[in-house]
Image (cartoon, rainbow, N blue to C red; front, side):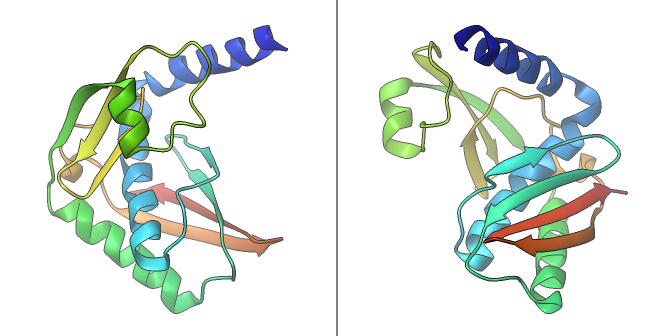
Length: 159
């Protein structure tokens, strides 16, 4: 079991080092923070990020209305248009425990953790490759959504 988890983590690292998904991956951070700010939910519980289209799952008490989804799309695009810089810093694990939920980190993680900041809009622990400024992302387009058993799934792409 430990070897399977390690292989999964290593495969994830390789995928998120692929610069072709950097715009989508950076947008995923913005979507997460926007969901937190607009709907007082946590960050995505599951993500599948790809160059052509992606999906995120959020634990939600209720389904979002079409107006809510339009507001999400509009706000994500507004943040992208601010041309915020993406800044990478490193912090000790002890500091990370105070600032972030580190429960999803794999065992054996370094004592120094990587923080990705999108201007002053979002900060999170992340191993992936990102664009340098949000204007490099493109336009966020919400494709479809579904809600089942307390989970909102949004499917989206960048134009």
